[in-house]
Amino acid sequence: MLLLALDTATPAVTVALHDGTDVIASSSQVDARRHGELLLPAVDRVLAEAGLELDAVTGIVVGIGPGPYTGLRVGLMTADTFGLALGIPVHGLCTLDGLAYAADIEKGPFVVATDARRKEVYWARYADSRTRLTDPAVDRPADIADRVAGLPAVGAGALLYPETFPRAHEPEHVSAAALAALAAEKLAAGEELPAPRPLYLRRPDAQVPKNYKVVTPK
Amino acid sequence: MADSRDEPLVLGIETSCDETGVGIVRGTTLLADAVASSVDEHARFGGVVPEVASRAHLEAMVPTIDRALKEAGVSARDLDGIAVTAGPGLAGALLVGVSAAKAYAYALGKPLYGVNHLASHICVDQLEHGALPEPTMALLVSGGHSSLLLSTDITSDVRPLGATIDDAAGEAFDKIARVLNLGFPGGPVIDRYAREGDPDAIAFPRGLTGPRDPAYDFSFSGLKTSVARWIEAKRAAGEEVPVRDVAASFQEAVVDVLTRKAVRACKDEGVDHLMIGGGVAANTRLRAMAQERCEAAGIRLRVPRPKLCTDNGAMVAALGAEMVARNRAASSWDLSADSSLPVTDPHVPGTDHSHDHVHEVSKENLYS
Ligand SMILES: [Zn+2]
Image (cartoon, rainbow over all chains, first blue to last red; front, side):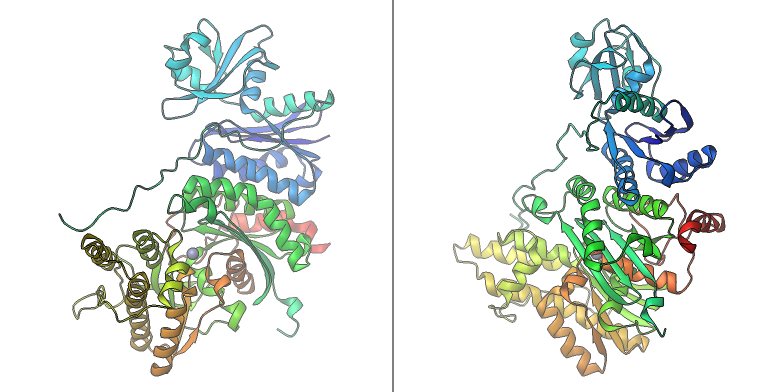
């Protein structure tokens, strides 16, 4: 097995190769505005580091968010197209699950929260690093204060709002290495992974224009 | 070339607005033109909603690539390159196409060509009427652009002579359709009503046609205001709005200015043929008036069939094939979407390093 994992749902552009046992190469760069530019060169670098070509990959794992849409789509579109060109399966994994796995907490509960911008966070509650208790959601930190009170929390969304998440700590962003390791574990256990479809959680911003503006001077 | 099989086989991806287009060409021969449009999802908003368009591109991309390959009857392995619209256009929408094109080119070991959307609109005519004359005068009119361009080599030299200073021509059609409660998009429906109306019924203004106005620039904002005011006056007086006459007179004003300036540019620059592209080129009155005026001026008119005038992947593939044929440098893997890519950049070449890299990655396919 050779998994190529990638995630662009947080400010990190992160790529990793996993051979079923270990992560054999990885790359993470944090730059929220350049996902599109950074991802393909990162894939190329990680493959070169492992001394492999893309056609050696047997499966793709991609973070499906939730995360800011423009960046999120870069990873999903790249994964989909690799899958098409190589004729290999493309699996999705919730980006928050990757962060929870990387947090390596055996006994929770705890919270994973990422930055959803517009003063909101994408978040979910976990029983431990492998067990999510709630569906990913998007909310204002103050509105979920009672639901996360007293819990440890990881992710940039938690670190950003210490009033709501006083026990926030690292990791800040998801790593493809964690995503790949989690996927490898689940696949080995015969678990079905989610389809590589984006978790947007918000409807598109689309205002129906009001009746056209009257231009005749009154 | 003696054998058309020697001509470059290129797949092109277009996502600058609301059409997910994937086209395949061999040289100047069209093999496939698959388009998935999200226009219906935008209709109730009265205009293209960028986030809705981007979501639709992500959904439609893989099926549309598949459909294009089937239609063309070629294998992805046989492609000589992947071309993609790098700009201008909606940033988020462009990025979906660029991400797909990069991943596809990389996975197949093919060179990648990030190309200009406007130059693609011109180059698509090669699929209809053969090699572009050099130089070519082009009038590009759509919901997003209205420009007069002069090109001596579509892969390296595109010069802007004039452009709209406010609304694009297609935008004016959309807005007037909205004032008349005819829905979105406005172009086709105005064209339809106008066919039954009198183009001389109402004398609407011709923007920027005074002796001191810039010769090749356009303005449709004043016209739009004037038409809206005329309609409102009718409504205020309790009279029925003669929709067909308004549509015909408005359309006549737009088309009159567009063709007048395009023909003038040809004469001034000594160019004996005119190419018209973009979604508004599907307008029947524009085609007819351009034909008349070009004939009178001894200019040969080239307008592709309507499906090639609106946004599509074949136009991107056409320009990509020309890039391959003329040995233009491929783009690098860090190619980005540029929502305001200047019209003077027909493509986005990479560095020498990345060009070498393309060969390195593609070695298996080159010899297999
Ligand atoms: Zn266009």
